Image (tube, rainbow, N blue to C red; front, side, top):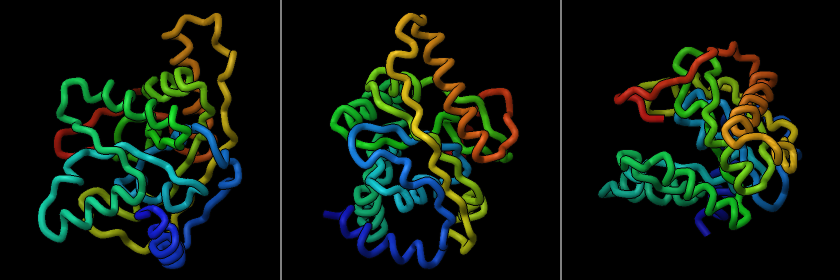
Length: 224
């Protein structure tokens, strides 16, 4: 119900104001489980993708967004529920595996799930090495991965900014990558690494970002 209201009211308004350049939305499968794997430049990414994707896309979000009080807390709860976010306690010692388990459950229910293989936002514009959770999900769920490239969202809501700015952003949905049967005879660890690298290569080809050649690390004062 909330998602329907978002699509009918909020989405057209947001698209009219910011007029994002959306490319390849028709490449996203209309139904069935699918992973949308994107580069990550801003907090706003998890709003931009659901607003521009042709179907509902769930992202993980810290459970703090559901526990606020007063009017601000109510708005936060309703908004993140409306865009299909899945709450997760990131302070849990098993947060990483819990996140993957929640994502896998969503995919097995036929949903679309959004993920940032870099793990956290790039603060220097480089594209960091992908972590293999995205490949674990794709290979375990047996679903395709649509690479997504975002451009300009770092200017839409720069780090430290509380309100979005009126800038043009670009969202490009790439050709789905299907790993079915491709790694049947490959050791699991190597399969996950190779699949992840293929996804990141596809993202880089669209985003044009310079590869960092290393993993990104989340800082305590900057949640992903």
